[in-house]
Length: 286
Image 1: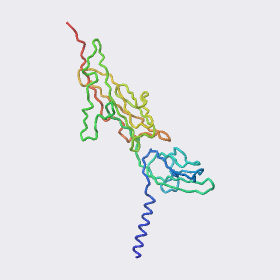
Image 2 (image 1 turned 30 degrees about the vertical axis):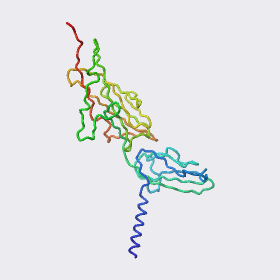
Image 3 (image 1 turned 180 degrees about the vertical axis):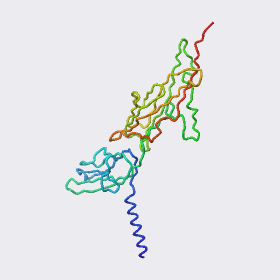
Image 4 (image 1 turned 45 degrees about the horizontal axis):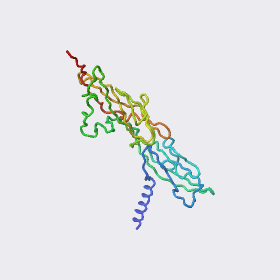
């Protein structure tokens, strides 16, 4: 009987310990979440009460470190029964609310345990078609890089008599942003770019000089590159079009967070090759 009691006590202690360290929810770094209490209050029992929200370390012994989170609303006011928090660093946290009634100094505390997963600010540039579909499947065992090599857009067209204008070609790059491993839609983002040729425009973002600024709610954009054709006799006169990005950042509630140098997905893996057409002269007559 004593042995059974000992096993029962050990099991109970283990369950208590598990409850202490188990997370009630798991979030991603940079994500925003709204925490709420007293969503329904038909009798008005909570009206006029003061709420104070806090983010604590996992043990609940102190406030979480500065820079690990940001209150977007709050954190203390009358009738503030919900608050929005953005996570800025991975770790384990307790979100706590203290409600004090309007008629006295009595309070009630509630806590919820949150685990925040780590992740990077990561920008990806891919050669794509006009609809944004990537030209190469890099998840395939042998990516088909031949799809990146095509004739210029003027190939096969009639060149106007008396003109040496061989026109231009339009190609596209899809640029996607993730933060903490998920598509970034909870803030704006921006980057600088360098392209080997052509003029860059976009209907999805603001292009100013060599900088691109993307609006809130948009996780991917398409950049259109217009490149003057260079006709020539040999394929070596092809245009090798690439677009690389730098100075990459997202904007959180507390300011910009940059992509680090350890993330290497911020450029197209292979250049788009625009093949030249022969520089055929005007037709002459004897």
